[in-house]
Length: 304
Image (tube, one colour):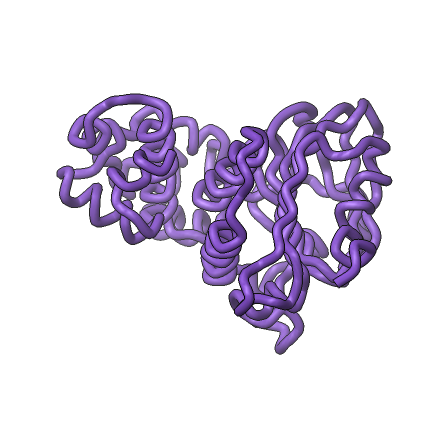
């Protein structure tokens, strides 16, 4: 496979941003995934009003890391009402162009996966409409964000990423995203959850801040619903429509994300981390962590 094809979307990013990537890690997949190469790139743009990206044959998953908090998608109806802020994700499927208004500098990490490889790894990307990857803008997914940040940290360290490790991490991410992919019920070219979208009387941003502040408690749906001023049924329905996840799934993913940071960055014992992240017991924490991440907390700490 030629460099021209392999770097097509990364080159488009570099042209749009007018700067090369600060971090580059490109790896050929294992023999059984011979359809193409995967790339992870770290970017910091200059101050700009916005940028446009042409169509490519790659699936792109980007995580907003820092900078402008006013990034909006340009749609056929004008600027999106939602803004991308640090911590939110955007998906650009193969064959889709996109434009964004940034109003400043933005730092981000982008994952680029050839369409044929994405089709091998998870659901088909050009099959029936309900199976196709659809654009999503400014949505939250702790599992995918943590995975992208881990790949970026490894790339920045100068340590070569093993091809099989890259493929397995990306495969897990795509399978996770495919499970919660948007369906044809979405409207607009870049649909998704936005931090400033409201559920009842508070925004999603405020709701997630409340969850983070009380992560060690056993928060229940009734309590979260009361915070929004909605009934339990209305809250449950609205939360899933906004995020693609149930509130219970979102709580668990957030607990896993925080636990991963504590495991990687501290020497706190597992029982304390389980308590701090709201699990009923260390055994429950270990089982849930293994199901979400694919290894035990102790193994994750040893690898990080």
